[in-house]
Image 1 (cartoon, rainbow, N blue to C red):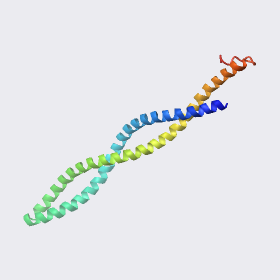
Image 2 (image 1 turned 180 degrees about the vertical axis):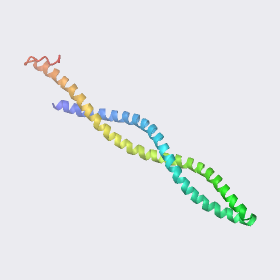
Image 3 (image 1 turned 90 degrees about the vertical axis):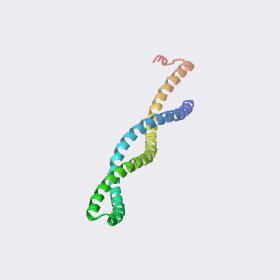
Image 4 (image 1 turned 90 degrees about the horizontal axis):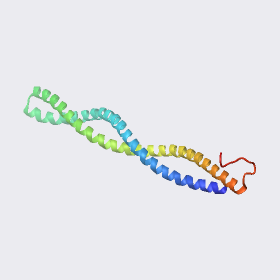
Length: 166
């Protein structure tokens, strides 16, 4: 009994370490691919909405101040209205595209790191529990067979059960 407990504990530790490493590598690869796809889509939509609002406000304020000062001196009131509309639209499109690309990359990396850490911890806990149960069941079966054979060899089969055959 003591021997099986000692062997069982030692095997559980070794098997848990080996399986955890292998499973973590495999799961990280799969999860990274899945999460990157899901997060990229979700983040692009969310970031585009937020960035468009923020950038439009900031750019409109900045461009209006600069353009109004320059154009008011050179051009008349009609040109100010036309140029402000055209330039604001064109610059907003160009700047939104450039900033969205940069911010998407930065935020994807940051979120992937955070989510990988969180998911690794959660998955490790779940997998450890599942693997411990499965390994314990498998090891118990193996040890019961080994013990029954050892008992039969040492004691014979006093009850006539033929343990090694069953």
